[in-house]
Image: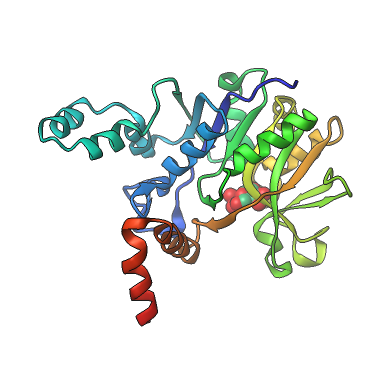
Length: 284
Ligand code: G1P
């Protein structure tokens, strides 16, 4: 049985430029889909996959994320006093008691690989999840739980992937795989003419701790940043890394259209909202 995966890393230091001015004072990970912030979906997915330690790689300007996961005694008291039990349960349910949170600052925005490296001391010598909250996934079984099931079969790192349109390869890490889905090549944001396939990396990873040594030696790559994809390419020289086409629908909530579609589809999943929303969409 491979080592259990106990820790999830959330790189959340990015500026959220694409959603300005909405993200001038509010971190993009705090934007709600229906009535829950993106980061809350991320954390719930990680906990459902067995994570009990959450590591947020963050920026000093994004204190709202930490505040969201801290206890708010005064609010809870007020809700209890006014008999609002449902809302109180929702507030208390933000973080189950057995789950711990750590926050580490990513001083310089040097890229996703650098962000993951910032979590090294907190992760230790164990396999861990990386979750990019911008990629929201609607699925029966959470995507990280799907990755964990695959990892338990192989003991190897595994990355969620999906096919992307050829003309969009320059927005993704792109992987070429063999018949077993072992990754043979992985490239960050290649131009369509250079892409080894159209299999795009989605923001869910389960990585062995050997990735840290590779990231330490990873220089700047695409966009002048230290890329996680390049660290994974180096890891592949030592260990197998698998791709996993996950079951579910992914919404790129880093884009306005993806964010809007996520709000609609997640609302359609809700008994209290689906009827009214369907009526409105029908009228359109
Ligand atoms: C990051 C990764 C990329 C991956 C993508 C998924 O890019 O570097 O390999 O395909 O997330 O969302 P970003 O979107 O942060 O530029």
